[in-house]
Amino acid sequence: MNALDIMHAEHACAKLSTRYANCLDKFEDEAVLELFAPDGVWVHMVKGPLRGREVIGEFLKSRDRALLLRHIASNAEVEVLSPTKATGRSYWTAYIAKPGEADQLPTISAPASIGAYTDEYVCIDGQWYFATRTMHPLFRGV
Image (cartoon, rainbow, N blue to C red; front, side, top):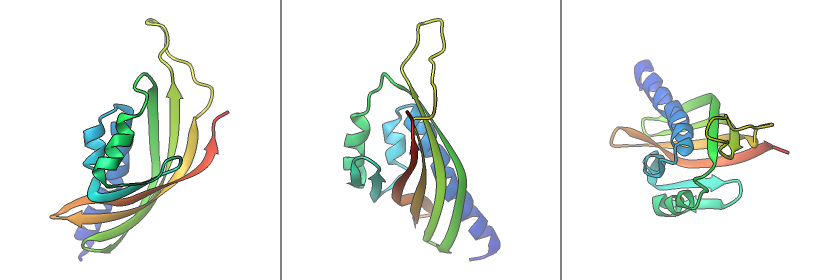
C-alpha cells in the first residue's frame, strides 16, 4: 500500500465512528447496521457480544425512542495493517435526556457514560466496515 492508500483507509475507518454516533442518535438503525460487516460483532458494554447484523438490529430496535441521545465520538486513531484489515481506538461521551416541555430544552446534569472503543475493521469490495467494535466503559453518570 502506498501513502495515499493508507490515508484513505485511515479516513474511511475513522469516519465510521462519527457516522455510528450520528446514526445512533437519530435512531437510524439500518444505517448503523450498514457500518458493520455482515458477520460483524458489536461487543456491547451491557448486552455482551451481538454477532451479525440481524442480532445487532434486534438490539437497536429495542432502544427507547422517546429518549434524546447525543454521542460524541473523539480521538479516533487507526492503524492500517493491510489492504483489507485495520485496527483502531476512539472515545465516546454519551448524553441521554428525556424530552422537555414543547418550548423548553431538556436538561442534563452529566454524561450518561464515557468510554473507549477498540475496533477491528475489514475492507470488503473497497468498502470499510466494523468487523468488531468493543465497548470499554470508563465512567458512568450519577
